[in-house]
Image (tube, rainbow, N blue to C red; front, side, top):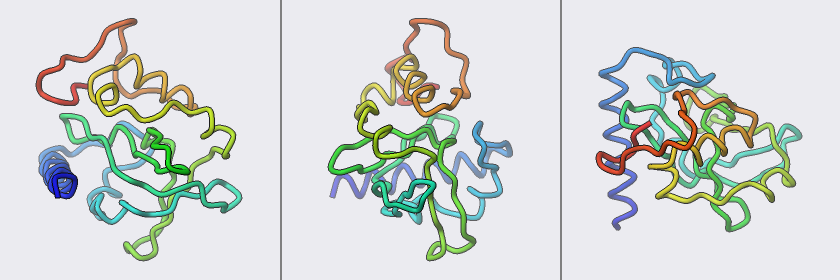
Length: 156
């Protein structure tokens, strides 16, 4: 019940932030994608590798205070892994046609750091390391050794 309320709240917050901001998300995905789709349509979607093999499914999202999707949380063999949203390729025009792929294989995911909600929401250094692990550059400036402020939620 609490998890459903949290997902709903995050989706509403994201929708409001998206409506208020007219910019790209800071990733390879353009605002047009997010203007046409609700994140709830992606929750539960299978994520495949470049060969089409299923890696897992999207469990949740981490959104920053500006409405950018920082991470998709992948349920990979019972392990939750934070995937930079910019590392995902999303195709399809309607929710039932949407496909999500990640240019990584099972070995990469086996070595990936486990998702840590507290760190994903407050620790820029950790988040930056996760981005670089998946070959992505973080969209925020990352002064060495600096953590985000604890108050106010995700502070990227």
